[in-house]
Image 1: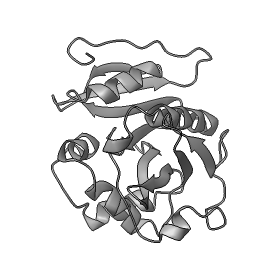
Image 2: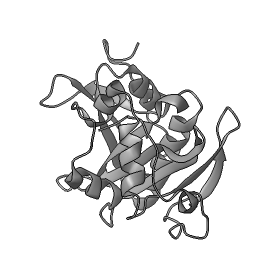
Image 3: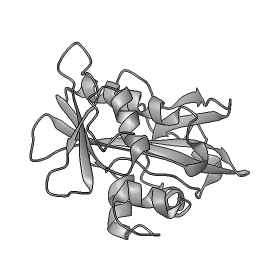
Image 4: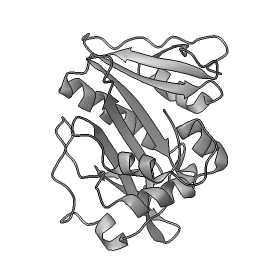
Length: 214
């Protein structure tokens, strides 16, 4: 899973409250933190919380159908409860961040980023990024990708990867900018796998796969 959009939620006062945020997530970049988009609108990046159910459900609901399909690789409007539970209550060895901002006059989630260790491949972790439709091209995807790479590196992850729909050119280009190489996805012709080694001191060079990045 690698790319999507976001929407709006419950408990608006708490969503932007520094005092109720979770303790900082381990990693080189502390959380919560204030970040400014290219349009100068402030965004708070904070760890996902167990009470973010309605916030995250609204985020998904507000996506365009194409964005939801890019993120989850299936057609849906509402997240199944089991999916929602897993996304707002990640495993202890996972890492998940929400971007919170004022959007359309209300406090909303405008992006998510996460990486989750692959239980079948030690040292490997799968990432996902989702940015709300109205927040594309404002630098948020790049900022979240940098934080994913930094945090995964700090955790000792050796290989970071994501499965992306081949039609999702925006996500493929974002991954390429951050040193990921794209190859054919295993077992599903709709997908490309983007991957990057984190155990080398030099950044992996991006490789364009014909038919994937335009």
